[in-house]
Image (cartoon, rainbow, N blue to C red; front, side, top):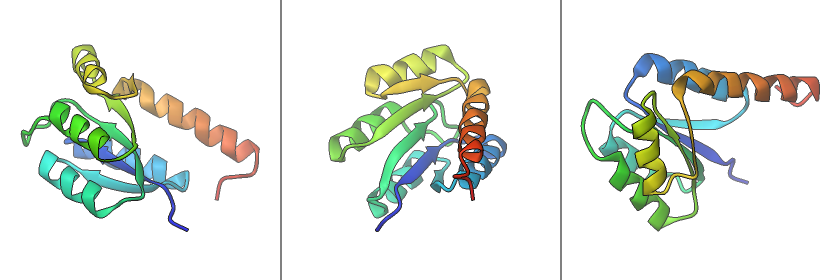
Length: 124
């Protein structure tokens, strides 16, 4: 059975590293792309990806609004807009993202998930 996967599309390597470490500790199969071209390739090669964390502005360029629409048109995925910019998150939601979360809040959410799974004895 294929484990469901997550794709992080984010150009801030330090933030991405911390986030991927947290997600990995929760047993989530993670993939990382810091630009639109790499994100397209990873998504195309990994049909198990069902969750995407999408940043709005990537230093390497490429339009994550178009990328969001492409991903949604190709298969059923849950895309969360992550950005420090409220406007960027709104643009991504308008493009089709299911919900949004500011980067400074995402670790609070992960901490709650991790504590909940540890209390239930589900963490590895």
